[in-house]
Amino acid sequence: MENRPLEYDYTVAKMFMLTTVLLGIVGMLVGVILAWELAFPAVNTIAGQGVAEYTNFSRLRPLHTDAVIFGFTVSGVFATWYYVGQRVLKVSMAESKFLMALGKLHFALYLLVVVAVVGSLLLGITTSKEYAEFEWPIDIAIVVVWVIWGLQIFGLIGIRREKSLYISVWYYIATFLGIAMLYLFNNMEIPTYFASGGIGAWYHSVSMYSGTNDALVQWWYGHNAVAFGFTVPIVAMIYYFLPKESGQAVYSYKLSLLAFWGLMFVYLWAGGHHLLFSTVPDWMQTMGSVFSVVLILPSWGSAINMLLTMKGEWQQVAASPLIKFMILASTFYMFSTLEGPIQAIKSVNALAHFTDWIVGHVHDGVLGWVAFMIMASLFHMAPRVFKREIYSKSLMNTQFWIQTLGVVLYFTSMWIAGITQGMMWRAHDEFGNLAYSFIDTVTVLHPYYTIRAVGGTLYLVGMFLFAYNMYKTMTSGRRVEESELQNASPMGA
Amino acid sequence: MDIATFQAYGYFFFTAFLVVVLYSYVYHLYSAQKKGTRDYEKYGNIALHDEITDQPIEEISKNDEIKK
Image 1 (cartoon, each protein chain N blue to C red):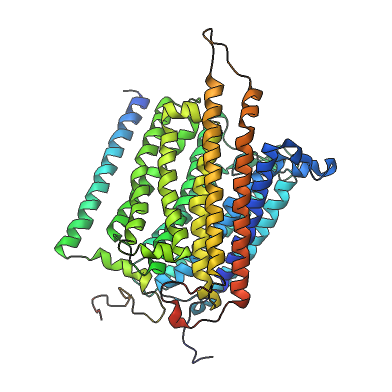
Image 2 (image 1 turned 90 degrees about the vertical axis):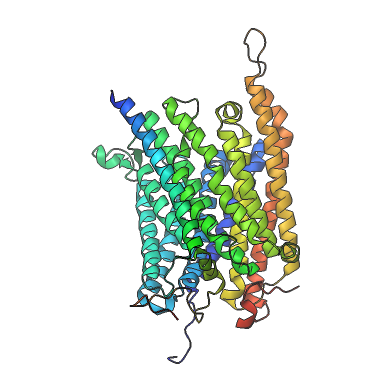
């Protein structure tokens, strides 16, 4: 043992890879059920009236969003951190028993939280704050999990060999700090049982804020959850995995630093765009709009940097499905960071707010950018952590095209549905009477809801192909030598 | 001047200050590279040469002056 050369230890990375795949399937499966429920309401009770409480839209919806955000995405962030962190800091987890034990504890506690979240949401136990539905005992457990991750990050940085922190590490640190701050402030809550001297259930709580203040804190949190959950760590991934897989150093390291600070500076102020035309002060609404538009610059700074990294190497996009996933992800990042600011302009928002266009925007971002990038990262990691080649390149290609079609069907149907909806809601005759009732819009939107459900189902099929390919890679892919793992990942036919 | 006006001015000037800081940072990055004080672009190689046996791009040592 003593003479064995030092190697990176991917034990914890593998654990989180497993939850990324599993919770991805759970989150997207629930999403697909919800999409079919919206198109065909009878699906709400498809499993029978007796369990309708657990299968209806309102009970499942938080489970979908939370499984995708805190399950799939956060697992992906942890999995990639435990891989990328060691490599760019040039230090192995095997070098510190403490960090290794901490990593395993991190995973064990994370699993407990997942069970608690799924259980409580299915039972309908919720604080009713969007993306912050968990009651106080779970919140405390989440804080513990997060702090352990922080110890892990800074612990690894503390024993590193590489003096400079690679740009991805900056983004992982920002994810840690950003979410910590947002989560703590938005989840400040008063346990009602203890505050009232024994009334109600012990686990219930109410927000410490009320009215407009609550809305402001909620959307400062809600939008920045997108920032520090769906953007910052995913940018961390692409800055490592695209250069590594393509063998091309990032096009401009200086631009990556600049885009980083730009993003940090601008993003935190943009959340006000969720509250346009509401009771929050007008200047805050304007500030939310303005900062959202400015946000195009740092977002495109990173995305263009990634596309330019492929300069002179574009044949790789055609040759490698893994590069395809990453380039499409980066393109969808550009696309959704242009779409978001457009929606945040007050006059556009007057039409778009509360419509399906917003839902479409979230999904072209999450399906096209976040999920594509996480899957690409796992595909790149698989041969390195399992020492086997990716089981099937053609399956990867199939998955890529099925899911791309799925995303396109999803966002195009939601664009049309959203704009139609917005136009119909505001239409009126010369006396100011509304031209349509709500049910008129529902009837018109039905075909688009069906198309959305088909798009989502295609994406889920791709997710199953992904899981199968990963499983086969782990169990029966050809064994590879270290020399095959330099840049482009080895793939079987 | 009431508190709201004071806040508004404070907010505006603070934002302007941060913009100046950001642009100074851009200037610093590009001028440092041009003058040769620091080569930022070499850090891009950290991702490419990331085997545990690879020589770090900038090694941590007790004496940072010694570079191989």
